[in-house]
Amino acid sequence: MTNQLLTHCGSSRVSLEQLLTIPEPKKTKSYTPLNHYDFAVNILTIASDLLKGYRFDGDSYALSSDGQKMFGVITYRKINPGPNEELKVAIGLRNSYNKSMAAGLVVGSTVLVCDNLVFSGDIKVMRKHQGEDMHEDLHDQIVTAIYRSQHNFHQISQDVQAMKERAMNQQEKYEFIGLLTGEGILSPTQSTAAFKELWKPSHPEFEVDTLWAGYNCATEALKSSPVDKIIQRHSQLHTLTKGLYLN
Image 1 (cartoon, helix red, strand yellow):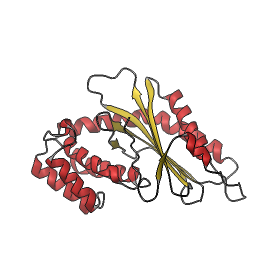
Image 2 (cartoon, rainbow, N blue to C red):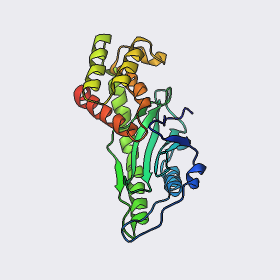
Image 3 (tube, helix red, strand yellow):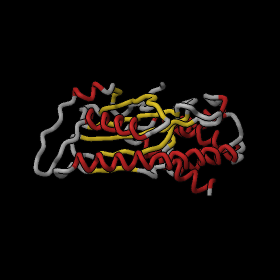
């Protein structure tokens, strides 16, 4: 599988096992550490138990240069997909050892043909590293989020179908990319990359005159986002696109 976490700004890709190489900080009265590796394995275990009809498809992780921040994407694929089911469930996760951000999880999807991410941002878990019950509380929140994610995934699938049915010619695609740039979802460099995708798509599936094709030009460009911003940018893209074109 293509690694979905392209690393920038000093971060680097690592394996699940390499998460164990970063020493976990000590617990204090005001700080309860969450081990990078344990967090990822806990999500993998819960998702494998709860996502009935799906199988594990792949995972990718990244660490900041000092190892204090961890980011990951875990994907699951339907065991018996239908002919038009081209999405996988994607779970984005993050954690920190330096109190710079809360432990977090968000559920979305990824496109089979190109591993482009689609995060609606509807289901999120955020938990500060505090309290004696931090681990138990986070575990319960993860269970609830992944259980609810199947409805969320169905909604994303409906959004994708609606984007495929919404006609969008080349001129409208230019306007769409320009809007995403103006809203700060695409950086100037990413905007250039998205326009190049319009002129010469990386995948023939995205050559058609639909909103889905224009959307994927943007998601392809977003692969160069800083690893700590990639899920946020995808969520912003989906929210804006849905608000302007699918309501």
